[in-house]
Length: 102
Image (cartoon, rainbow, N blue to C red; front, side, top):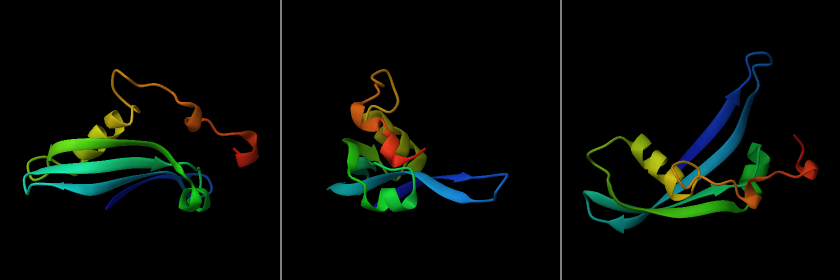
């Protein structure tokens, strides 16, 4: 599994806060072309992300894993979950309530 973490490094406090997380799971394919299940987790801190439910999920199929860099897989995962691309739409599960803090 590939885990993509987004961290905020404060220039003022020097505090490092994980603010987002994505999982990319190998689902098979061939040596050259991989199939992956992808999801993002709800939360804005490491503690929330550790226990948070899946917010969005998708699949990346026939990814040329040996020919292009892993960042292309991350980009395709974001597109598959509608975070990027022409179908980009905010979803209700993307919104944080006041009870979760800032």
